[in-house]
Length: 448
Image 1 (cartoon, rainbow, N blue to C red):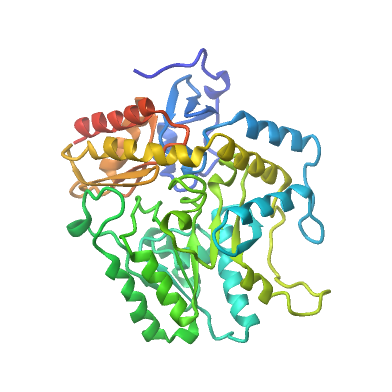
Image 2 (image 1 turned 90 degrees about the vertical axis):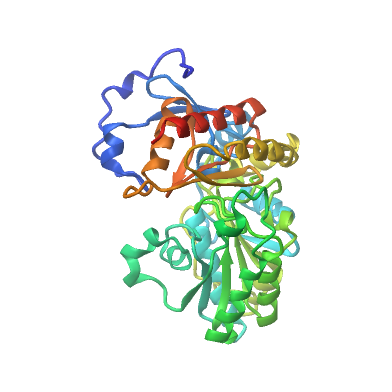
C-alpha cells in the first residue's frame, strides 16, 4: 500500500497541463495520466494527491544526500539573503572561489582549476571547447577530432550529442552535428557479461579499438577522448576490469586528452567524490554537475589539469584567455549549495556510507535474476540496472509499464529502452532498498 501524506495539495486538481512541453517525455500519454510531485524530503517525494513515493533514483542521479537536506537548504536561504546574483564576467563572488578551491582539493592528481557551468550538458561543451583551444594554444590546431563511445550520453548540447552515442538523441539533428567525430564501441555484451556483479572480468580488450581509430585518423588530428567511467543514462553499463587503464595508456601515447564525464558518477554514486579515484585512473578533464550540490540548484563545470589551464595563461594579461562562459556560471545560490553539500558529504561520511551500501544493493538487485523477462542484472556503487527482454513489436513498452506500476505503488525508478535503472541516495536505508527491489519484483510478475 502507498503511504499518504496528511492532505493532498488543493491546487493540483485545477492544474492546466497544456502549456508545458516536458523533456524526454511521451507528453500525450503523460498528460492523460500525469505524475506530479509537490514536495521532496529525504528519500521521499509527495505527489499532488498526497501519496508518498520512495525515490529510487536520487531525483535524476543528482540528490545524492537526499531531498532538501536542511543544511543545504539553510545555506541557500542565507545566501539569498546576502547576494542573489553577480555577473561572472570580470567580477566574481566569494562563494565561487571557495567552491572551486574545495573541488580542486577533491579532484585527483593535478586537476586543480575549475570552470563553472550550469548543467552537465554545458559542462561537456565547456570541456570540448577547452580541449580544442588547449591544442591550438600549444600550436597543434590540427587536433580537431573527438572520440566518444557508442551508447554514451554527454548531455543535449550539439557538442554533447555529437560525441554521445545514443541514436535517438542524434538522428533528428544529424545535419548539425560536429564534424570529425568517431566512436569507440560500448562495453555492453550480454553474451560475456550478463549478471556480472560489479566490474566484468571480460572486455578490457574492447579499449584496443581506440588504437584502430587513432591509426585511421592519425593521432595528430585527435583532440580528446570523452567517456563516462560508468555509462549511466544508457542503463548502468559498467567498465570491464582494466578497460579504463588501457584507454588512459593509449591517450598518453598519442598526446590525446582524456575527458571523464562524471556528471552521474561523481559525488558518491560510486562511493567516492569522483569515479576517477575509485578506478585509479586520472583523466585530463573531469566534467561534473548533479550531485555537486545534491541537485539543489543547477550547477556544473569542468575541472582541468594545471598544465591545461597554464597553457592559456601565456599571452598579454589584459586579453581574455578563453572566450566562453555563461550568464549563470557559478551562480551564488548554486555555489552556496555546493559548499554546504560538500560539508554534508564530509561531516556525515556519505562516501563511506555509499561504499557500505553497495554490497547490500548488489545482493538485493541480483535477487531479481530469474524473475519474468529479466535477461541481465548489473551494478556498481549505488547504481544498478535490470535489463528486460523486449516485447515483440513493442520495444520499451515492458519497461515503461514496470516504471508506471512502481510509481503507482510507491517507488520512483527510471526506465531507458528496456532497462530499469535505480540509483538510491547515499542516505538510503536497507529497508528502503528492499522496498524498491520488491516493488520492481512485483511489477515484473504482473507485467506481460
